Length: 79
Image (cartoon, one colour):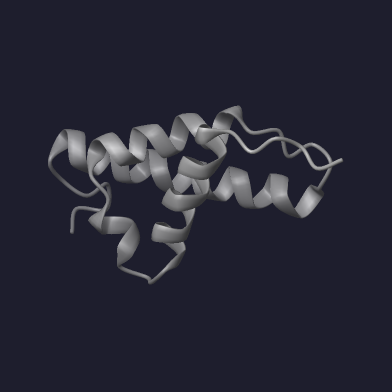
């Protein structure tokens, strides 16, 4: 039997699709969308798949860097 798809799952997939749509789409997300995506990705369990765990860690690193840029008003690389 297929697991139930929750509203959070649908929202996570929607935000991930938005991010993976293009290289610049990640920078177009609002601070609220980034924080929500961060919460949803952290909450999701990817322990069954090593590649998914690595992708999750990389995505969370990028989300945290972008949140920092938006909250501090600058890029962490000074650009």
